[in-house]
Amino acid sequence: MPTQTEALRITGAPTPSQSRILTPAAVDFLLALHQRFEATRQQRLKERVERQSRLDAGEKPTFLESTRPIREADWTVAPIPAGLRDRRVEITGPTDRKMVINALNSGASVFMADFEDSNSPTWENCIEGQQNLYDAVRRTIQYTSPEGKEYKLNPKVAVLFVRPRGWHLNEKHFTINGSPISASLFDFGLFFFHNAKEQLARGAGPYFYLPKLEKHEEARLWNDVFVFAQEYLGIPKGTIRATVLIETITASFEMDEILFELRDHSAGLNCGRWDYIFSFIKKFRNHKSHVLPDRGEVTMQQPFLRSYVGLLIHTCHRRGIHAMGGMAAQIPIRNDAQANEEAMERVRQDKLREVKAGHDGTWVAHPGLVPVAMEIFNQYMPEPNQIKPPATKFSAITAENLLELPKGNITEGGVRRNIDVGLQYLESWLRGNGCVPIYNLMEDAATAEISRTQLWQWIHYHAKTSDGREITPEMFDEILRDVVARLKAAETTPKDNKFDRAAEIFTQMSKGDFEEFLTSVAYRDLQ
Image 1 (cartoon, rainbow, N blue to C red):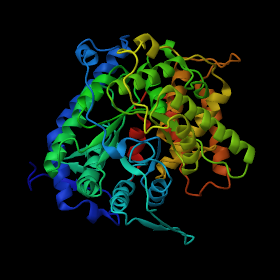
Image 2: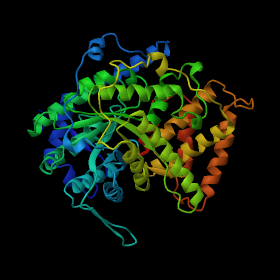
Image 3: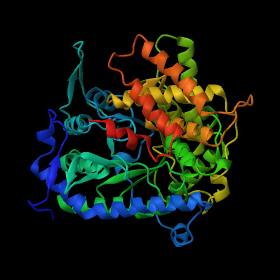
Image 4: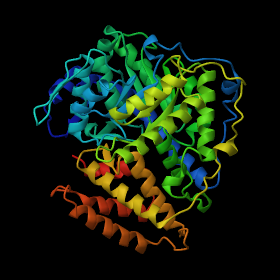
């Protein structure tokens, strides 16, 4: 266990709630997590680098021979807690106070409070987000807007899940012996320590979403963290439940194994489809054959994404647990009735596809979409979920199906949109907002990641647009200048905007050496 000699430094500027969140007892728990698990985390991250080297050399992901007995055996995860059986519509968003209240009140089954892709992880956002969730669990959370409008919780609210940051991220403002603590352990540890017993007393439990896993050993690490944390607080093993986002191409080959590692703590798997596309680009970045078409053409109708969905649903239902669908990023369009109806129809069709495929629930990004998604799932899923043993023991989905290259065109419009949306998102993120409405879609970091990695691919491999023009660094620069000038001149752009810095980072990541994560690079700029 850590001792008083541990060299702990907290370098973030003090926030209003810091003393209530970083209590001596909570800090001791974080130190215990760091001491017990940091070496293993670093080993898992080293294995990611080693695996990428093998992929660069031409190795293809496939189902593991070493874990075949797990895939072939008949087993199920622990029984689903009563309060989690019906998850038909889940809303996600960052942990700012107004968002937490509105999401819990939205009528959704679940609210996933996000410290990850829809959160710009400033020190203030991370600490005040913890305070907001502390108050939400105890139902004392309130908010008064600058205009005087008051917000408080309804009698009935959504079930709370929390998504900590991924294993690859650090919390630079909290260092131990000169090393930053894992952002995963920081986010998880503070929420769990302050709220697990309170949630149990209120008939719920500490529920989590786990992002960016690349292999089943990373799920094992989370399971070990859960066992340790439950023992530390003296609560029963299996109290924690976690849904894993399958949002990397390598994890799609280890879904059975991930569920097996978390079998005492599993709440199923989720199709994190935007990050999955980003992962597909990233993992095969050194292969010219894997250049993708415009982002708008990589839809769920592409065979590799249909295969991923089918395998996830089959795997979850065979193991007796939820197979959650993906995000509808549309937001209501207040000033154009026709455009709004067209957007809502796209949501309906997406949710209809999901429920008919066999998903047990779905995601939306805005409270206004909850009734739309709920209506579809209520109509086609009258029971709490669709979990039942599949007709065949093994899925017909093959490794080749998961790796089938998407087809489509690359256009100048696609280049321009990637620059435009990626730059707008990054500028907002640098100002502390990671959940950004852009062109009537609620965007998070995954969109920016797809945008910059596609641009890197197209420039790096001299891709040509459908009308025969090569995508060059000069084309990128010209479009970027136009986009920056337009955005800086817009009436709604604040005078203290960060478009110049965002353009520097975005250019570096689109034209320079390939970086694993945009958020890791941009985090250096955050306070």
